[in-house]
Length: 68
Image (tube, rainbow, N blue to C red; front, side):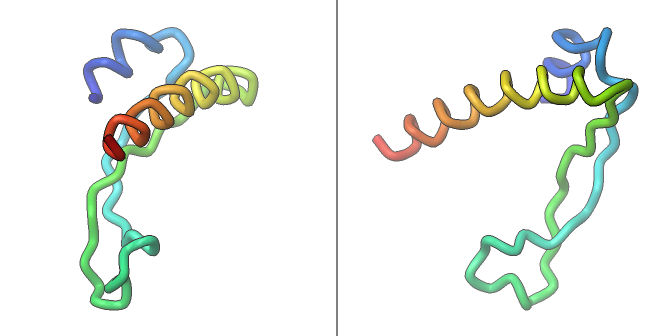
């Protein structure tokens, strides 16, 4: 995933970091179990909004595929 983001959006993403966070959507989110997430930093808000729109389409498609 990180290679795809670097290759596709190398002009707009400043850097990508891994961050450990608790997933509050999980049923047992109080257990303290942490997962790795990607933290994307952008050069400006417009770049963020453009990448966010592209990512939302991909996420919706993946969620639809997971249901079937």
